[in-house]
Image (cartoon, rainbow, N blue to C red; front, side, top):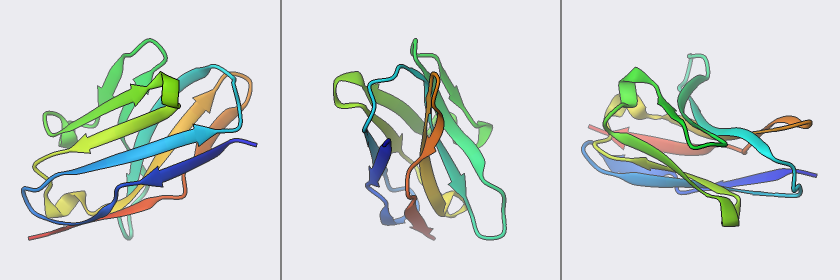
Length: 116
């Protein structure tokens, strides 16, 4: 059974940085893509960043230039480096792994709170 375990959320002041991690286990299936999503109170879940199996990166306009997605294939882990954090970045962040033949799996979510 596929499991995704997230870590790295927390409380930070505006302008600060956080690094999120998401480690996968339970399958050796090939990945289509990995991504990070977020959901703020009263809002829909939105894509923050994604990285394909060949390394193509995609970012939401609101985080371009501030956030960086990366991966460690050997560790089955995806990261999200978040710099210059702003109060609007406050949300629960979820990682997503999309596997060939298995579909999408989600992490449990980690809270990121940015104070002004």
